[in-house]
Image 1 (cartoon, rainbow, N blue to C red):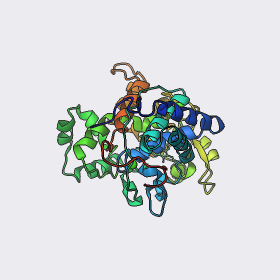
Image 2 (image 1 turned 90 degrees about the vertical axis):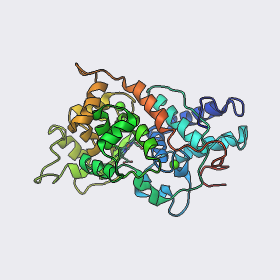
Image 3 (image 1 turned 30 degrees about the vertical axis):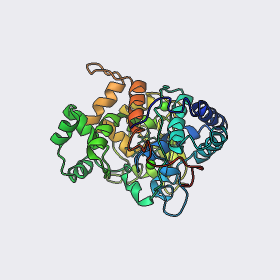
Image 4 (image 1 turned 120 degrees about the vertical axis):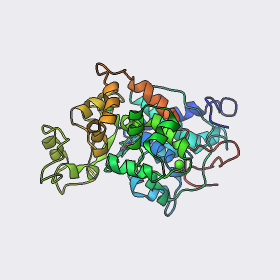
Length: 337
Ligand code: HEM
Ligand SMILES: [Ca+2]
Ligand SMILES: [Ca+2]
């Protein structure tokens, strides 16, 4: 039993439009909720599956863990849930609200629209310690490969499992940062297909200086990270001064932070990636091929970023879903029933 498009067609026909109009109205007063919700959905799916575990309040829940401290948009989900409980009490899960809101956020930032399969149910567990599943922004491709082999899986296993070319396998390993899934084959196949969007999500939104300013000063031999375009360094240094305010935010996709487009890949090619993990997508040959394909480089089979992003999102948003009689439909999104 999985998710399907139109799950609420009979039980709550207005479910999707209620979520959409709620996201829209919040977006009008605060456009930063769009990237916030997209990222929140990703952080939900990578911990206990897409089950709204990220939304639960309390001591030592996922919310309280370092990777989640800056997530934004919880109020949007709560608002949508309140309206849905009035329209169709006890029917629409918080996990589905979040998955729909992530899609709506991409649409609002002028990205692609796609149909979101629904029917997720909400989880009852949320532990801060589980968030080590989330990828780190500093890990080397090598150490990621090491972690992968900790599961007793070599690159050949990986390729066999998924039936994709070698470079895809290599590319996948970079997704595998500190990730200790229960269902390895499932996660493997999902992650392989889903890889290109790790970068894609960063076409909108911002990062706090604290996540990348180490690249600007004393990175190697007292200088900045050599993979940053030298012309871009002073610009970044002005935005994030040494010993400045680490919470100051700047666009992940310089010049196009509010728009869902492929410009992010041009920035990577030009040494203008903000996060180390993003710039590595260009410096590592295996992942560079994808960036080039999204850019339509000559001699490589082209990939349409929007189309691939939507495809990958559907896969990501099905990770570890609870359906049927698993989980529950929460009454309020911030607490289990
Ligand atoms: C290698 C994988 C990834 C790493 C290391 C990573 C890391 C980060 C970091 C450090 C930030 C800055 C957070 C802040 O300052 O608030 C960020 C922001 C963001 N990430 Fe990722 N991320 C990854 C994958 C993804 C994926 C798969 C998506 C979505 C599909 C995504 C969507 C976003 C968005 C939209 C933002 C902006 C958030 C905002 O403006 O509030 N990221 N990411
Ligand atoms: Ca979750
Ligand atoms: Ca953009």
